[in-house]
Image 1 (cartoon, one colour):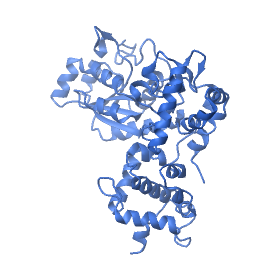
Image 2 (cartoon, one colour; image 1 turned 135 degrees about the vertical axis):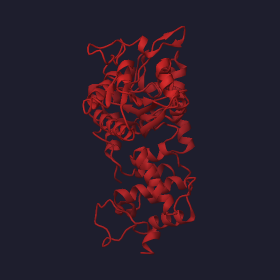
Image 3 (cartoon, helix red, strand yellow; image 1 turned 90 degrees about the horizontal axis):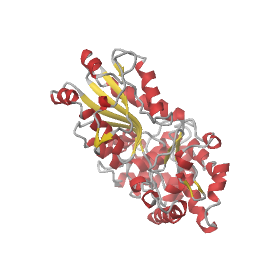
Image 4 (cartoon, one colour; image 1 turned 120 degrees about the vertical axis):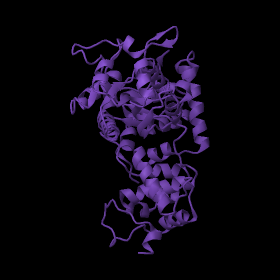
Length: 418
């Protein structure tokens, strides 16, 4: 059984110095679940994050006819519990046409990294891509869109407040009302409810996410296994920090399972990030140890994960030689079909099991719907069930029809008619 690079690497996590010490804190009977938690994290390296965030930004600006202003989202100052207008808390740079993207407490882990990405991106075209411009500079170039950029949208609080700080600028509200400017939010990843909260802001932003954030709610596991994970997080969350009950399941009970090389979101379970009362998290105080960085994969390949099939009761298919004969694309299609057949049809689940980005996952689903294997409501059809049955019983492709390692896949039902 093969595994993707990300899955292979994350399984090394428990064998690092940090991992060994973390696991030793659990009772022997609880260690199997603790290992499962560590082994099913999605690790995002600097390269994976930066390359695909830039790719997403580029795809967004391509569809905007005109000048765009790019801003790094960050925590905003408040006055009497109300967000302060953006430019009241921004420091004008020496060039006189831009403002500092960073807050006083910024570090390279989050704000600084996004700001650097924006700076490099805007160097490609300093006329049409504006790096944290002043209002006057946006006006002079008749700016058409504002793009707010972040690494991760968790509960949506930071995104909503950042948009609010810009919305407090009456000039921007006026431009938006007269349809001279539109708002966009771009992030590498995000959780559904956080994305929805950002989307509901008065500025009516268009949201663009490269990869849906996996959570321990969305992983392709049985409900019993998920319950065991939640119970473990609460049991040891109390040991890690009894006073922070609200963080035992991550901030707002998000149970995020994505970890960036530049830092772990506070939406992850407390047992992963706490450093208190003798407890040592895998990512203490949300930081990544140097010895742990080495196991972050360079990129997340788009390839099926047979373990995900086993977890949802598709063991026969997961261990079928026919699955391996299908090529990477064929494995992905069959994996998506198998998960949907078990009621696991949410995009974060499908992306986790295949390594696909949101756009690529949507493209695969569109093909499966077009082939008649999946309904528009993402339910498997009788034709799809027949395809799965065929995949379990015989080889999906004939050797003479397809070279080993090919990325092409011809569904069994379609081959019969060609």
